[in-house]
Length: 507
Image (tube, rainbow, N blue to C red; front, side, top):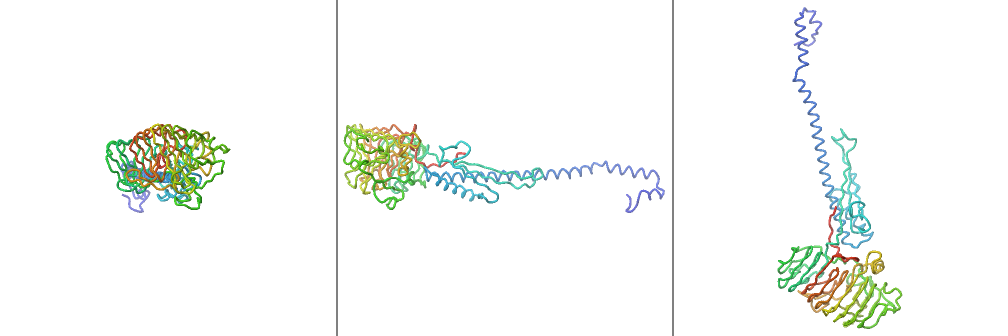
């Protein structure tokens, strides 16, 4: 080895021979050809590439993890928006604003606040892309889009900037598979009471608000239920072996699907006061042209009862008395029709006997009272009676469409017959009691397209009433001892697709 400061020229001057020079040069060539040096250089270069690849892989994995987290936030936001839309169904632009706030609050809770850390949260109601766009999903579907740019680390070796991750989710208020039978009494024993061979056949859900131990009570063990779901606020008593669905008990959040709607009443002073609360009631009054005084007992129609009503009851008409039909038909057509008890306990009811029938075509019948007391009831007392009711429509061209566009009556969308919210609360206890019972006895023909809405009353079915159209049963209590089939297929108008209670994630 050459010592420090020793040069080749000096070495030669000192008499080194050719042999030494040749040996020295050979050693230099050998050092350049040494494999150990090449391996070291190659390893140094390779480890750099490997470390870069590992770092890039870790960075990409973090992007995937962030994307999953963002997707969870979007799903939560879309679900929250749908729940808000469901609660305020059928909705409005104002309620869409509430749903948007709920969606953004949900994404923020999950770490993705709109405008924070370069995060952008967009809510579209209805969605602007996918399978739920267009006017038919107004106030029913919410699209939540979250985007956030990623900071480039190792990827900056290959990219000028990091990628922007964008995720999307859509929540929907699903009315087609939601509740169509709802018992609203919050504390009644047997708020839904099934006796004997009672049967429920529904392509929708059944719900019981009551939170007591036997909120849904089955007597006799022969009852059967076929439905998409059965939700109970409390518990179930009795045999459910013949049911196609297992009830969900202790289920919270079951509410009146029409609770947020403002409904008309003949009682004075609303919406300034009242017990329902008053802000969900709207007082309406009528002149002589829209009023009929007396009982209706023979075959007649709207034009006979209200010959001077130029709007044909589109703005509402009132019958001050009973409708008591036997071998007679009352045809009310399109409009809003109040049956007014005027506070008289023996007035303001509808009773159909043998061959008695009542018909509407795009109309709503309302059992009400101008005094706010002694609201009448609805009773089918004969197997030869018939009811054919078509609720006001929500689509242009539907019978009664103009009614649903009137602010006073907009809450009546899809409601075929109802009882004023000021009616006395039922005293149902494992079946209807003496107070506010509405009966369907024998085998009447019940063809209702829309909701039968009796929020304070009890609906009692005895015998085998035949149903031929799609409808909802929403009442304080339901007492079923017959075979009331419920068919929600083929609904052509209105909102008789089930109470808007189901909010689901669809995209």
